[in-house]
Length: 620
Image (cartoon, rainbow, N blue to C red; front, side):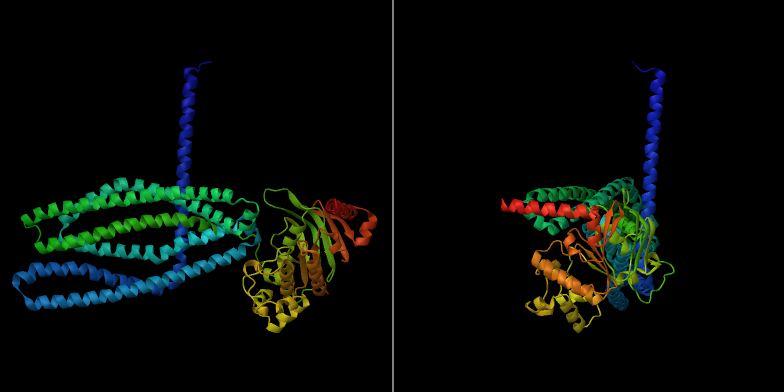
């Protein structure tokens, strides 16, 4: 059915309103982005504030260099207009001597300026990176789970490097060029105001078309920055996951994926470079066009005696240098604008709220005994169903408790909350009767020792890896810890004993050896609470026996909580807690729970059936 004229008019009106709304939204978005760019720039400059004296000295050196550069053309003018016609040799020698002194002072000032510029840039960069590292530590575990390591590395490789570029090159050059232009403008006006007018149309021509190139360069510069982050992440994954790619024969697949990321980044980068070069070419065109106009106007000015020959030569020299500096200033300001856009992600990162932090007024615990109390604890990850639902439990100091249950019921999440990697969304966790939120993170975490299923070892020596648990530990303490972890014997068989480098992530050691190093690390720390997260599940029977023997030695007298899927490893624990649906479903000794034939009985029965099935399959 065809639309009536009234309906068509209404459709056009609605379409017009929709277009206006989109334009208004885009305008607000650009305004918000500009405001954020300004805030990020001010934030970046804050790191220069501690070095005010050095900056003042830098400005003084820059001023001295500028005065020397602008005085030279004026002296040449004086020689041409006065010394040569009068044949005044003594004055000529005086001017030469003055020029020599000026240039020597200018040389010293420039060298000292360069040294100050580098010093200030390095100090400010150091302070900024220190602030980033501190904030990274304060953001805590949740940040690392939500953001891959490649993203953080890319931030240091791109955004941090961009801010360093502002400190080291762009900002000092902008200030110096701006200072030169102001002094040179006074000189040029003193020579000929008429010739100065020739410069205005060329700049008008540039600013009529130049912003188009700048805007396009900025847009594709931002896209290129994000593309570089995605590409760096892909490269990091291709290196860290090399073993899996080879095992699954997936190298061609991932190569294509990484290449695709590179193509996207290269495409945006080349477009950004194209518009940047176009902007520079157009600026140079207007510069040379102005030079031609200056020569024409200068010719008529000389013919009509509006300017002296020395004045025209001095003006030309100053014009060339000033125009070069002016175009360079525009380039640097545009480059700085692009860099500031790249620093916005860094600014946002530094202003992320810290989810887990020390309390304003912390309670001090002189001695930690290791008693833990969970009171109606609930927890859910963002935009996900609840994981822990009303978990309540009391663990006495020195008690050994095992958390068992099917995957996805919140066992590992409970571990994260004990160490305050996350806080409960509801409920309270207490250590020795004090809510852990009222303890400092340092006091809480120095009371806890972890042994994970995957042990992370640094690429340094065995001794340094053990000493990681207590950096001030003596050599004797390290050896005692290794002996307690049944690691001393195999360490002494290594090529350089305790000084043997273990390789990246401990690749030179077996799984059992790495776990015993981790236990020694924990032993030297002497924590009141020990958390074991599947510490032996990935080991063979021999290694598991050795690690279990080491654990039995270390756990004496300490509160121990273990996550275990293999019930055989926790049968001797004081208590087994079956977690189901995010809450305590059963609690008691192994014998008590097996006699009750509840959830633990079903788990044990399921494991036995699975083992019998594997044995039957192997026999067949």
